[in-house]
Length: 160
Length: 160
DNA sequence: TTACGTGCAAATAATTTGCAGTCCC
DNA sequence: GGGACTGCAAATTATTTGCACGTAA
Image (tube, rainbow over all chains, first blue to last red; front, side):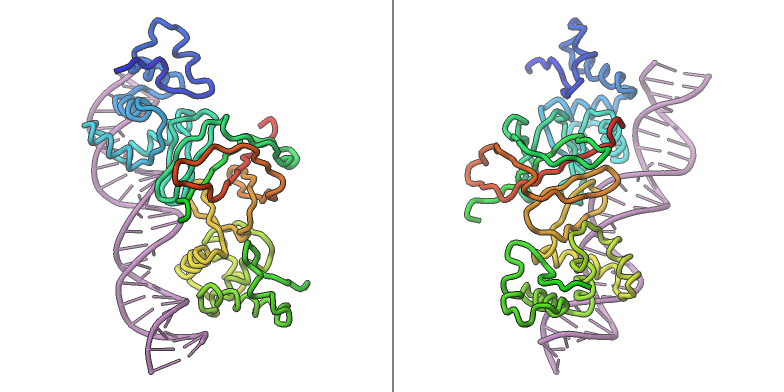
């Protein structure tokens, strides 16, 4: 299996963790350090879930999905802990919450700036930030500023 | 109260209903006709809810909100019927569903092309379609075409 | 040791559904 | 009159929470 230089990406992601260079290369160690750096104890469950979440590239998943994966991976973890962990990770900036249809809540392991394709009933695909150019935006109301701009490109079957 | 030429807007909205000109001007009649034209019987509840929904310009609301309004307006309608009606209206193209935070489901009475400001915890405001220009989009995957592009501009308090 | 985490089961919250009675056409 | 619609209450589904026990620092 290829080495992973930085298990978790994002705006300020690597900084504290991969800067030291020497320790880099052990994904589990990186993950533990990353958890500590956001104030979360690297417990067995959190490390295991972090491994599932961040070990396979960018993903969009919901609590139930992660729960299934954990069971398949023989990681003993309760659904309640899945929910707690997803929320804690999100609050810590390791995940981003995505609202799609009001039913389930989805989480994006890619917290850097980017957009999404969305196919009804089939889920999400990332669009790199550079592939979408928003060249004109309205002025925010007084006292407000733009936090971020999310673009969702809804797709349908051609000639559907 | 000012006259309403077309109670319900949207891509194909007015056509069948306001074309005849003579009947136009009676919002209730227009609404009933509009309901019939999408295959929904204009029952007391649906007309009352349609009136609440479309009689006051563009709105973003959830089931609970509409339920409260109905009660305040002395419209006897059950919460179950609110949900059913919102879903039927959405399916008929009179409303658009908006996913914001995964918790509640919101509905937009404006089904024409436009975008949204979103302030965490404070809800939505419309952005006219002309105020947002997306000048570059990725190519859709094979066999797919773009249905529509939704832009959400997330705001936060300045210097928050 | 000791505060933080976890698991379980019960509690919420939003929404849907089954069915008997009601209403529009 | 007959099928579509509504209301109610019960059922579902997604998620959160309280509390006793376990575990990282």
